[in-house]
Length: 68
Image 1 (cartoon, rainbow, N blue to C red):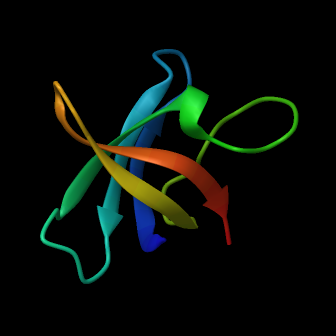
Image 2 (image 1 turned 90 degrees about the vertical axis):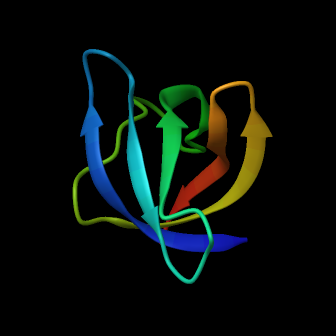
């Protein structure tokens, strides 16, 4: 699992970016469907998260995102 900080997240559009720590991928795309939590799936700038990085057609994308 990688660790990073939420750079920004747009609730109305359902996506944002995470700045990954110690990874070749400095910014990783995150979609609300990858957030593993109950209720409303959102992230806030500055939050620390753990996630897996997967390659998609759009580039690097976060999967299995959990708030720390």
